[in-house]
Every structure is written in structure tokens, then in C-alpha cells.
Length: 178
Image (tube, rainbow, N blue to C red; front, side, top):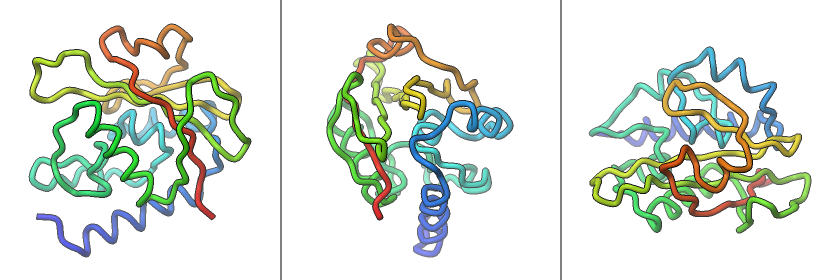
């Protein structure tokens, strides 16, 4: 069971990550951190979350803090297109990001960075996997392949059809709230 004290500690730590980050994020600067800390996933990487592994390893009723919606709702969410996007937007709001709709190819202000959202094609599966990619400060895109996976740059082809079995859902431009 998640206590109010647990929620406050986690949100405080995650907001500190965001406050300390310089957005847009840098693939080169983040590469070593995420390779040396295997308990992060594509969601944490895309948002620049670097809260210590001790929070990642806390699982309440099957929850993983770096699954969309867990940060804001602290409950298990079965993802479809609507719930995945709603969960992402809810987390971004509670973490302190301003969010605007965008596209992969939109030009955005220097204060923003883009995150693209993908959902596993297999609609027969009860638990559909998600994936997130981010645009870096130099305009390139990158992602982390699963929990503890490698961080790599992304080709234009991957942006439209992530890993061959994930459908592109949406792109958002985010910036830290003042």
C-alpha cells in the first residue's frame, strides 16, 4: 500500500530531477548515467527522471514508478491509446511540465523538448507495452530500449514505427513550468 508519505517523497524527488535538468536534454550527457543505472526505462529516460534506484525498486501492489500514470495516480493502468496518453499527460502535469500538442517534425521553441508515445500493436494482449522517445538538444531523437536497456539514437524510420511492433500515437512538446 502506498502511504501519503511515500507519495510525497517520490514526487519531491522526481520534481527535483526536473528542476535540476537543463531541457532539452542531451543524448551525449545522459548516455553514461542511464547505462550505469540499469533500473530505468524508456519513460524515465524520455522525461529525464534520475531518481535513485531505491524508488524504482519500490513496488506497491505491482506498481512500477516509471510506468505512465503511476506517478500521478499510484494505480495499475491497462493501456490502450486513450489511457496511455491520459496517464502521460497526468504525470507531466503533476511533475510540473507545460504541455502542448506537437508532431515529430514541428519546429518548437528552444524552451521545449519533444516526447513521442508508442503503444504495442498486439491488441489481443491484456497488457500492451508502451514506448517513449525524446528529441535531444541537437535535434536528434533517442530512446532507451526497455528496463536497463541500451540508450541509442533513433533513425527517421524508427520514429514512425518503433521497433517494428509499436504504433505511433502522438508527440508532445514539454517545458518546465516556472
